[in-house]
Image 1 (cartoon, rainbow, N blue to C red):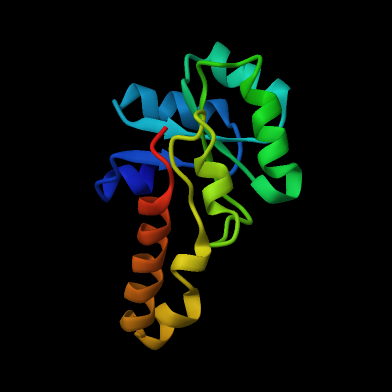
Image 2: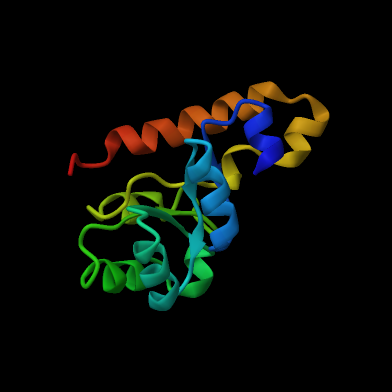
Length: 138
């Protein structure tokens, strides 16, 4: 978190809920988006005053069905699912009103970056934006 903030990060995303990272960010006026996978972790995030969390690893822990189940008793929480999000399930996640945004590594593959293949990166990101544009407005 410190390195990210020193390099200009406006928010910090982490795979899990680490209270020291959230506190570190909060003390510096930087938004934190910690990952949660269970209702217990979600309750901890709420107790820390968070209103948005990363839902990770989304597909491995139950996907849309679990996210729908968690958003019922926690209607004010917003989620950013990552982990297993693809072009084939992106619309399913974005259809949920509790979803703030989605992340997906399919858009920015490491081999494209290493090869300097920015055309593939651009096309992949353009495809993702097109999918989002076609999703119904919630």
